[in-house]
Image (tube, rainbow, N blue to C red; front, top):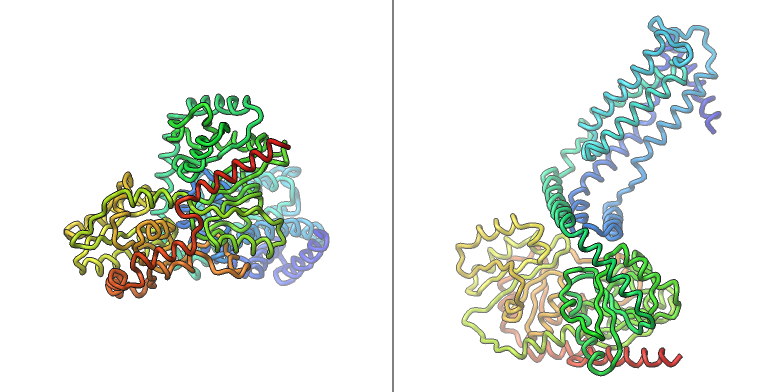
Length: 625
């Protein structure tokens, strides 16, 4: 292949020599022609690089949001690439082409039959490493030209200028070192080609920037803001890690040994972090109350409040992500229960020491299982506790569409909602003179806080109602400055309140209307309080871009306009009209929303008991084998 390319290049250089009968000028002319011929590739790479840097703000925010989870960051970046039609491999094209052309030039100059190889008083037909003398200037000048090109790229190349200083230095060192090293072992003519190519690349860089200016396409202000947001997360994580690392690692080691020393484990619950116990709470308490089964509970959070509940029959362990990988692969238990999807896809694998472990998935939301989870997220579970009929139909449709083995679907319901209903009904709720309107956005990209909060408040504050903005906790964590600006802008309005304390749910329970986008809190709110939700149609959160393949409309869309009403972001000026309708229309009265709740959810008030009884029955069956 290289021989063929060398032959072609030899003819081309010979043609250039015939046009300009000078060995050196012929090489320079050939170099210019290759740059012109390859210009479309350079333009394509320039556009692709601009597209990449344009995505950097989103990529930085993905890193900040999922910091520490490489799998999730890679998955989210892949979805972003797909959405923006970006091709990472295109950036390798010029490197590959450059190497192929260089090897072709080496072969071409070998085959070129020219009597006079002198140029500027120097013989460019010799190899500097052998001839020495003045010819050693060629590799030195080649290295200098590579240095100048790298400096220009680090300052002006749209992609290279955004790389870290470390990456820039590495690239510079490799480029200069390679130019210097190769320059001694190929003919000086190849070195001349290298020098001319670097100089022309610098000129081409500035020409492309003038014709296709990155500044016209990239929001550098947003890019800088996203860098600062990511930097805060990294610094906070690094600082916290330094303080607790030694103590936490020692504790993890002890808990790992303690977990392994117990044989014949019947059931293990796994929780990613603090706060997830609430999804298991009633199931676990029923099992402990009705049986003598010992429950082993693994948490990925050393500060999980569940440690306070530890007892003889409820043993709790802290296992971090790294040790969790091995622990799960060595799992020796009859049943493992978790709320973490994507079993077998990422770091959590099924046991390799036992093939009869029953893996049970407990949903941590009552929403859609096809739209809101990654594709095939539940494929490797044996049993799934189902909250509603639509989820049941979706999983069966997935199995049929993708030719999957049929799973054991248990119609359980959603025990967290049962607890919320009990808590709500146990408290007295006095309706005030003014209606409480709660704005509770999601944490997904392009949420209410990002797209239309000002427009909404300008309209809602015209009403004689109490307006409460309660951002997602993650938004509070990452955008404190924005929230302070919002508070300063509207604090003069007596009806406005910005709430960033999440220690109590009273604000949620006492609201007469909730306004959100695609947050699952809407269903918890409406099905607990039996009050309506106003949905803002921001871009829908789609974890599975192929959700339409199974042909079932998602729960989040089906129920959305039954428990309230939705409006588009360009119709915010109608929000007050919709609010008044939701407060007065009989279609959104308590009885109507209660009927919708009863229609879509299983076993309201007893879902945990149903789930616990299934677990107990299965553990008894497995113990008899």
